[in-house]
Amino acid sequence: MTTNSTSTGTPPPKLPAPQRPRATRQERREAARRDQRLASARTVAVKKPAWQSPMALITAGAVVVGLVVVVLVSGVLNPKATVGSLISPLRPTPTSLVDPTNPRALGKANAPVKVEIWSDFQCPACDTFATTIEPDLIDQYVATGKAYVIYRDRVVIDRFATDVESHQAAAAARCAGDKFWPFHDYLFENQKGENAGTFSSAFLASVADAVRADRTAYDACMANGAADRVAAVNAETAQGAAAGVSQTPTIALNGKLLPGGAQPMTTLGPAIDALIAAASASPAPPASLPASPAPAASAPPAASTAP
Amino acid sequence: MVRGRPALLLGGFAAAGLAIALYLSAMALAGTAVACLPGGGCETVAQSEYSRWLGIPVAFFGVLFSGLLLGLIAAWWRTGDGRLLLAGYAQGLVGVVIVLYLRYLELFVIGAICAWCVAYGATILFGWLALLVVQRRANRARDEG
View: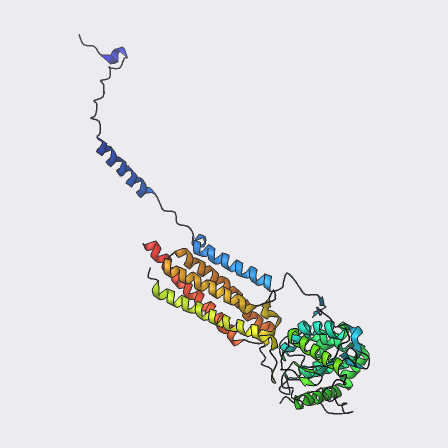
């Protein structure tokens, strides 16, 4: 009689699984390497987008740094004080020092040293002198009564009949009357380019407003007397050229020309001091170049007389 | 990557820029008595308010910039350290941005062109372009290696 497990419901006893032989160390190592190779092959390299590459990031960073430098040095963060679109002079000439008998002169006429400044309102070197050296000259020598400063027109920038801004600026400054020195300060503070349209009639009128010049007198002078003023500028320019003023700025001390250029105070100061010492030793009146001739009543406008 | 010829080219640009900056610096140092001559041409750019940053002539910054760039290129040539080349590339690009701004000032604000300043700008621009080419070749060589 046979036993049928199904008929009774109990499963047949399981036979123990045949034991595999234990893998050697080498076999285990080879299996591990095989698994690793398979894992590497399945790994998909994730490539970064181009914009995240080191080169792209460094490029962007360098551009940003460059722009930051440009912003910092452009003065955007430190805007200059302006009157409308005009830049106010940083060191305005004290109007209390203006000679009441000569609006283009500062100090006392009997000062021991006469300083003549031959200049062109469009000349950048003259701008350097007017804005960085002249204020010290005025503070140290004019305010203390040691020097008498006279501004002289010596146009060098205007060349052709169409290049007239030096003449126009000089004429306008003369038309400003007793506001000559504030006008002079604004012109140099706002100098930009050479005959590039900066010293237009409208600009010069805005300067007249900024310095609170008598606009009625100024407008009449510019409309009716402009030719006279330009003739006066030309005459003074010719006078300077004849006296040996070939470049601007040129400084003359008691009539003697210094080498052309924006002479620093380290040069001017000792030269003036020497003249003061000489004057105190032998008090002769200070010499100067011949005075500017009076303009003709109806002289026609003249072109630049640059040599 | 072979560094000899690229370093020579890059160093040449930087050295030319350094020489121009040194010349402009010497002119700025001696320029306290610069004057305007009849007819203009009195180095409007050199005398403009934009010729100085923080009271220091711009040319001095050019000397520092080009000197540093030349140093980076020389160090890269000697050591082959790719990071030095990358630093030179970044510095060159900063210089290009600044030089473009200075050209804008000359053309549209100052209204005058300084030939020496343009020459210096050219050394910066072309030097950076050369750095870009060399840097990309270095990147390619590294990826293929």
